[in-house]
Image 1: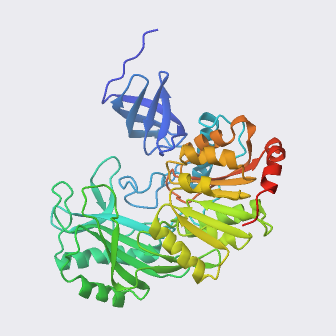
Image 2: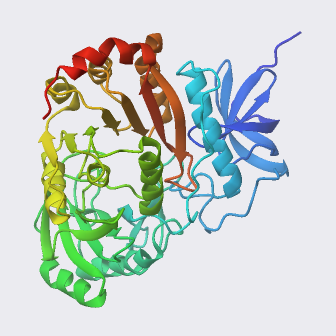
Image 3: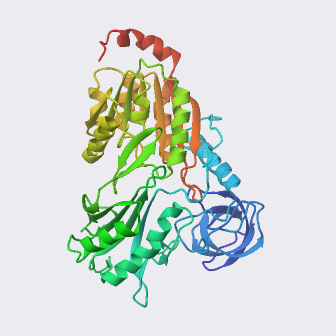
Length: 471
């Protein structure tokens, strides 16, 4: 049989059967795979081939012949252009099913696990209006108007927004009005190609449970004429706004925040309630973007661990203590490990603020601190960045052999990779994987995997653990 040769720009018909972990639809034609953004499993469509490879192609939706049962009308008028969301055209129930499948596929294909115990995804309380933090690149229109928004899909074209349906609605007035104030002040918007201009990004943050807000301008340098007067005006205009900050990023980089932040008016942090505790959150602090879903996942972790009060718990990659502090209240002693000194400073402050005195925090890379633990923890919490754990962390855990490990992941591919290493030779068993929807309307999914030391390793290691003195 003669193999059909695809040509760039050619129109073909496909039926979408699956979704990738980046959110694109997946179809097949003539034994080759076609990736099509903005499609849903069940769609039958005419698509235009954009990038053609021998075994696959990327395409653009040209005409929808028959819509999927799971296709819905997006709630945002720029959903088909803005790159902030990928899945507003997919029903929320199907989004959850797709995310569970994404975790299962990663566990099977990357981890090599057979029938992994992946639970249904922990649904978000609301599929919209949930983001407690938004950071918008700024730009200038053809007529010279200041714009803020997200970049168009697969481009560097800014889509101007006056409101965003996935961010906390209380932030929308600031998004719409602060642009006008920047315009009136005459502050020059940063041009990344020429490395000229002043303001690069607008950062908005809110405490979901307290309502307190922070406004941050990311600037090329500190010289922003009139910022003190404008900052004071913003505090008066928005009663819930507690601080206005500048963050300096003078580098040619795609990174949003620089290393220095100054408070111009008010205070440099907001208060947020999380799991019954109070936290200080600064403009550049890492804090889960969906507060309520993070609390729900913490409840699953607490229930699954069923801590009895005698345990030594280590929270690796602990940040400002978001998981460490609620769990510390249920154990004998807790220790947080974190490479960022500023985060550890905040974690210590948050512990004092909540009267939690059985926890210590250490600054340093987890792969260097964990082998020096001295006493073997019964429970280890892992919450690494997207790249997953350093191989040395995995090897140290296999040597220390804590009874239980909870691995909280923001990228299921690296989760599956690391779980495969931890479970090698049957040393650990996975009892449960709980995905959680921290980012509705996107393809992103988080998951918590629960591991227990196998019975053979428990028996072989029991004497060594009994000989180690208490902290």
